[in-house]
Image 1 (tube, rainbow over the protein chains, first blue to last red):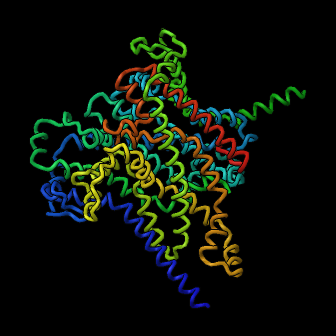
Image 2 (image 1 turned 90 degrees about the vertical axis):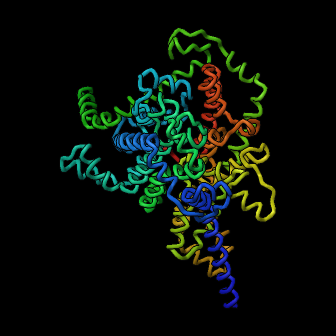
Image 3 (image 1 turned 180 degrees about the vertical axis):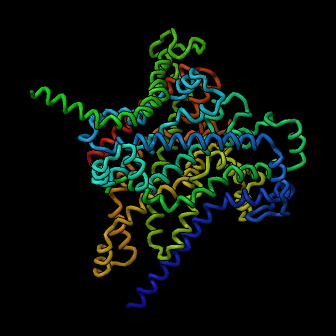
Length: 294
Length: 308
């Protein structure tokens, strides 16, 4: 009896683990294929001979991308956007989540502010009014157009305010008695206690800024102002060759367009692939304690 | 004297609370400029809008004419159908797949294996739809994409996943699940972690095997969160995913692939039909707001769930 049960459990474990490993590998296979293509020769890639390992290994595509000024220019815009955007997001998120985490007795205007913010989740102005507002403020073509309209990360505010609520009120009272101001309490007590949530929303904000492409595409005036994802959209998805200079066009005829595309796709993905595992241990705590009370 | 007392109380109240108001001031200003002003801009849905006259300029009012024009378009029904079809399937599978994988992952004993699998399935979530569209367009290509290479090696005719009206929508749905299911698991894994271990012990004593424990302990332990998540996802009923569809859409699959958001984009920024485009966006906004309100209300009544 006991051995039968044992065997049953063992079989279950093996099948289950094999299934999950298979699933995880399948999830990554498309990315591995593209990575392999980027390191393969153009003839091998055109001939459809590349699977999950580079064929006729070469760095040609990367050398080509390295010399491509427009790519690095776009990368620079993205880095600038992330630096400005993430700092602004984090600052506004922290200072608006803190007062909203107080209950109504401690902060009488709370409900009004909370609704003021919540309504923006419910109703949006839509594409054209949004575009025209930004145009009206003369932000088109500047990095601020990519940073200011989304300055308040509403969902992250909700996440963080719920996290703040789990911090016992005695912490605040004790600090108040010691003569600390609300600003001191926020930055010296609440933030150090909320690192998992802060790390999680920091990652969200970073990923959001790095990955957004649409605003760059329509709010920038010239291709030189595009952040990386918008740039990539035009060369990889739209296949708009007009963005390339004469020299670049001449060079592209020598190397396969496909391997170069794959190299650019991989380089654009790399920063996020490197960043997120560092934040992973915070996810569950930061995300769930903020989203679901219990 | 009581009036004076009251006034003094209000004064100290304001004194004590003013840092809170100060902290919220920048947020109020930003949201006013970039959320409330555009919201006011929705009025152009009722105007024959001429951009040169400006957002709140002296435009000609046309009542519901933009909406009438919109709903008389021959392809509007198909666009709405595509949107709801894609969005609903994404909602359904986006709920089921993470739950199943989370339950299976919970049964894995080795922590390092658990971790590794998690890290791997999270990965696509952190990549943009630009990167993933680039990947998909390449691997799904009928000429030399890896998927069709593998299919042909087992004798299947090449499939043009992104260029065929029969396959486009499901390609969109499946690849969306691929990107998002891993991260969707986080909430469920946390819910499982909160289940009282005594319940499992009791089940073992009662002679329940692995499957019975998964079915009768793990799943019921997650049910609250599953129902809550499904209610909260209701607001997405018209969100078929602009970032994804816009990048995978091509002229061949307009019939099955065009959704509200891509339509709004083309009308507005490509054809410069500002009024009509905004009318479409307005329509979507009303329906979505209705669904979100109902979903939050249900979540509040059933689970005492409060957003803020």
